[in-house]
Image (tube, rainbow, N blue to C red; front, top):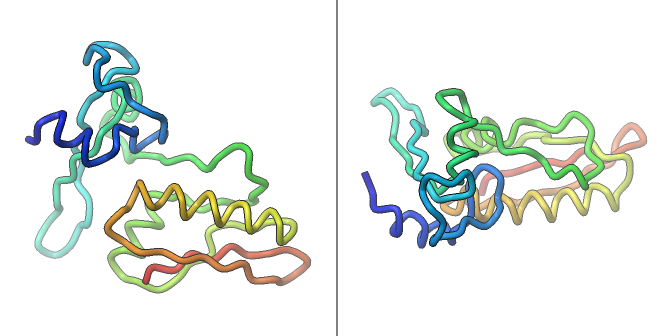
Length: 147
């Protein structure tokens, strides 16, 4: 298991689940205190890789042993947003592209694209992603691509 300070420095003292700042000086027993979330990722025929990420104690506890959920920003106007964690794991493993949301207009798609790329730069810093907004059916499809 890694040292809390190592993981905190690597993750920029941001909770990987809620993306809010984690106070490195807070008590580890506080809800907003730092903790290390260890979880299995990148499943393959050879097994799983254990990943350690920084999380608030409350975020880590709330997640428990269930699959993590990284929520979309409530400020975005997106319809049928794809689950971020599962989509990123799939694209990181297999490559390709997926439609991750529908937006009513191009401005909403652009805002969602900017937010998603910014969020993924911290959530999955080892994978390069691009997005594009494709018009169709009176709306815009937000497509995420692993490069």
